[in-house]
Length: 252
Ligand code: HPA
Image: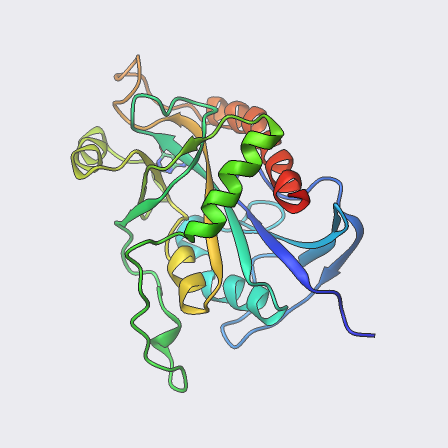
């Protein structure tokens, strides 16, 4: 019997290492020409639809943002037939309405990462692509996510510009001031090259950004340092909303 079609994949970021309530769950080991993905891919049923889950930093958060094998992650999902991907990414809030625990579905990004392998066209045998990226996220999937959030009663900021930084350190206040001048509304370390690779593979990709902290120098206490405990507490509270959005997306 052929495997059921996987309708959607969720790539979980910091604070999201499993997807609750997957029925008939099965861990699938996939290898790609780029190596192994960050974790086994767990496929299971939600709302009668097959969903795949991948932990971007590994199941025990052992892989730093700049060391993630983004190509293996995207290609492994692609090899399983996945054509729609929702990336869940922790971010720091820059815009005034992007305080801790806010969820956003960005519509633009600026890539500040350096030295990451950011394309499949990096190896012989891969076609040279110049992927269209004016709209870096799938317009259809973004809209479906925002509508699903509304149906689920989860408030999300619709749109915003995601600044992707190299990490793993957090940014200086001057760096965040620059990102703000550039038009970034939130900052994270894992949004790229994931979005670009998904585009190269022809997959619909959208991001649910979860604000973990005010970015350096932003918010009501701009001189305050950012505490990891605070980040984890905000993420623990806010990421719990994401499965509700995904369920509504699949049911809708
Ligand atoms: N900067 C970059 N990435 C992040 C942050 C931040 O402040 N918070 C969570 N991910």
